[in-house]
Image (cartoon, rainbow, N blue to C red; front, side):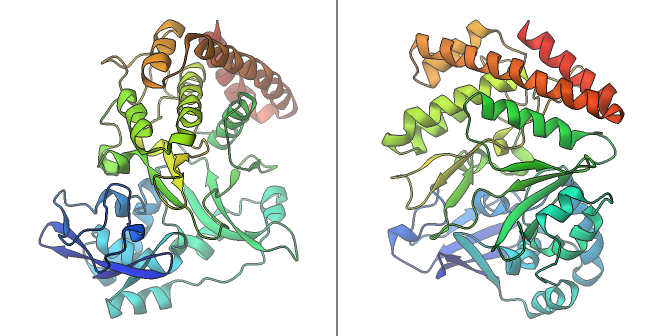
Length: 394
């Protein structure tokens, strides 16, 4: 069993009964909801998919990190279900939601297996070290890494510079199957920023091995709530490819505050255009998110994240979700029709945003071409990415 807190106030308990996960509120205060989709009520919330409720499943690692935890913990804890994994991660989770496990064995395991030192590694050290320090970061911060996504990554608390406060960063590396994925994502985010999207602070290490992203939910008081669109649609990480971009747009229509709705839908449309023009085939339900402080009264779309050109690795890749009932690289006409109908934008605005995205990619292509010339080891992959972008905008 795990106690669940909202802004340091205990609000309920999370437990497992057979194959079902059960969350029960112990508060009647409406403002202390755990998710926009789970308002405070007397009756328990039961989730029967052999996974945690989507808002709690959001914290469960995938891919590389999940395998690390299974290998480390299965001997002591047996089969690792999501409740056990959340309990293990609980001491390192900060933000609007926090968790305290009841299981003393798990508490003892975390105490002996994990350390939370304020490491002397700074952001500058990571960016400029000739060595690959990712394994060192894993040793320091594995048990703080309650973060989804298949790509190898770790959630680290670092200093920007000596004497400055510690900040939370997501540190990504490329892995063996997707070379230079860090460089790929860096320039895709540069294109998104140039197109007018909100993006987090992002840095690429000199050795190209690490992408350092400042966590946009950290260092705010009170801590903001963050919910992936998968959560808003009642889906877990196993269902992230099930759905449509029309459903994504409807989620933003329903859950954003009136004063932020048009701005949020406009950013969603920019993200859709960039997804097609950058050939990002992994824009699934977990790669769109919502931020809020009090709730739906101030909810708005989150900054862009996890934006990459996937077709340079998988030439036949297609979009992650459907639009108009199909998965293909849609035309300007089809995307603008989506923008008008589902993002509530007038035709002139969808056309302006399209042109802004085209200009942003052309501008970023020049940066990428220069980077490719300066880094011969990256030349082959750089040319592949540039070819994909050129094919899309032609």
